[in-house]
Image (cartoon, rainbow, N blue to C red):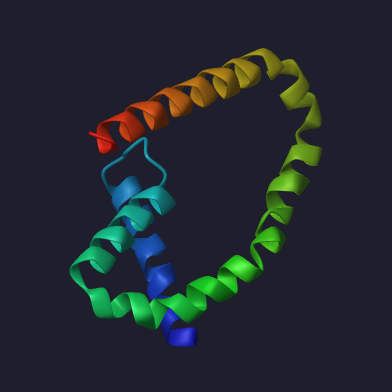
Length: 110
């Protein structure tokens, strides 16, 4: 399990290196996940190897939200002062997500 966990962390590290090295506006973990997806699509055997570790992480996913919750508490005043842009971003992204989902479903039903 440690070996596969290291593999997952390496993909995140590579994503961080790419994001910082090329000064990209995309977060490193997102790039790492895309690289991991590409790796899993090209290497089907890796899915079976990584599945137990991924399932273990998913079982403890709630613990991973603790740092984000603490950050919200620490930056409460900033969230209050910037609440309008936050609310606007939430509304726009929700609507955009719903529209894209509807279009994909419509396209898949053809």
